[in-house]
Length: 406
Ligand SMILES: Nc1ncnc2c1ncn2[C@@H]1O[C@H](COP(=O)(O)OP(=O)(O)OP(=O)(O)O)[C@@H](O)[C@H]1O
Image 1 (tube, rainbow, N blue to C red):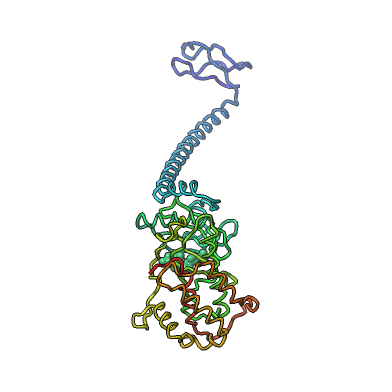
Image 2 (tube, helix red, strand yellow; image 1 turned 90 degrees about the vertical axis):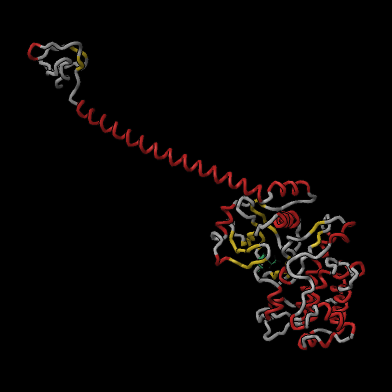
């Protein structure tokens, strides 16, 4: 036990110590001052208690400050998150999200595409690192990425310069998400909450056919057999688009840079931005060729004549074997080459209605019946192969037969 507190009036100590009892009691003070009121007798432990109280107050104050800081930090985070959410919503609307959802819900058939978050795609592409760029086209830049589930994808970051590009983007999502064909690149999904819309495709590892046609790759020489196979695959995919899908789809931008090659060098048709899905009775009105390059690209070394014109003239003069790469002419059977060239020739008829349908083309190409002697594409590691002219014509031109009206 110890002294109780000071006298209430004069700050003099009380005379007597506390008795055993802790509690209220009266005391008188030195110099005749009297204590007023009752005092509380406290134990020795009270010193410790006081220190504890001071400590508790200090802790509380500290915690209070921390709490205020945490609350401010949390508030800032909430505000920032809300801002980001609002921005994402704004981006979603600006990128045509509402229009897309409208189209998807009103369109026929099963739509199979995931709506990715911007975070998932940022992670997948290492924040759109330059090292991940696969290529650049008229519509945007394509990055290689890996999703958290391990899937390797190609992410196309669109350039949205005007409304028409937005429509192209929506068009591609709506059409591609309904298509499932082994020779058409698969669309896994899309993302609209970013500044520009993003499309997520399956990754096709072996680049574009354009590269193999123009750069004479030694890794994968385009032999006659391989070219015919590729032509059959592309024709098959167009036949599917034109007739097997619930509403005919016209690609309208068939060119070798839009044909990708998978791990087994099978053709995969890509880039459906300018494609159209149209009712059959409207096809004659709307199947105009789209895309950046003209369909019948002029050849620089051909004094302004287009590849198609040159080919037609050669066919008319019955000189088709003159323009063949000698090595390919040796590889392919004469009848096969003749059949192939005739198909290409009929596809170049100025009157679109007189051109064969993709169904006919596919059947005729298949009838060339190379399948029994088509080895795996990977086995074709032959050196020094030159580009074979006529097949290039076929691949680049005849596949558009229904699609181009010069
Ligand atoms: N699914 C994919 N897998 C692998 N690479 C791809 C894929 N899609 C596109 N690429 C690569 O990205 C490049 C650019 O593709 P994109 O479709 O944007 O443009 P493009 O077809 O070359 O040009 P444009 O859009 O002007 O017709 C392609 O040339 C190809 O190398």
